[in-house]
Length: 266
Ligand code: NAI
Ligand code: 15L
Image (cartoon, rainbow, N blue to C red):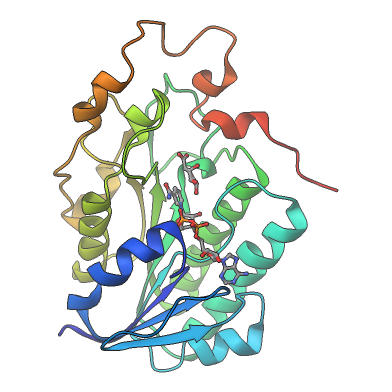
């Protein structure tokens, strides 16, 4: 198998539970980590429960690892203090450990909420400035900047995937544009892990949807091609109202419902 040991953080989460089986062919050993219970280890699995905010625990977590898939952390808007522990301190601890243990490649589960204040009528590419829509989005910008620094300074390669909406089906009209099937997510991870050189890459995680807001022109070297499309779910949203709807920020801005939260500072 190509890798000796891959670390997956956030292994108990929605995506972590999906990926747990799917990444097995890529490594002799998959090390799974989360702050909550992950069940019993299966064949060729190691389970390490730890809080990303715990520096010493994260340093130990990364020992002996060739590549990291970083999916752990808070995944929606939350008070800044909580985001700070899991997503800011957590990312800092992780990259420090990655550099100390000489890990060569990282995939960082960033988010479309790093750019959620662009409009749904805009077309973005990875060269455009971030425009976070939430404390959560700001923490993803922080992770992207952190990974850029560790590449420039130490040569640690990272692919930041600005994941759209990776769920079984789109839940609303917005997600017709942001939908990212589990199969396409898995394929993007495979491309990101096995492309010969990725440097520091930012890529938008989406399927081949009929209408999209993102252009992956700067990530062609990954060789990713989506197989799925939200088109198959078009019948779920038969109403003919305009999109974006006038005066509805959740359709005017890419971040959707995140526009209604916060500021989450207490
Ligand atoms: P999730 O919330 O289901 O999973 C996140 C996991 O991280 C949870 O199991 C949680 O226990 C763990 N976690 C939280 N704080 C932690 C800490 N301090 N230390 C260790 N582990 C901690 O989220 P989901 O949907 O599985 O997303 C996974 C990653 O992908 C997240 O980083 C999220 O921000 C990102 N993402 C997901 C999207 C989606 O459509 N599912 C869209 C954009 C980004
Ligand atoms: C995210 O970043 C969240 O983790 C996920 O729960 C969804 O809200 C997704 O973005 C989205 O924008 O649909």
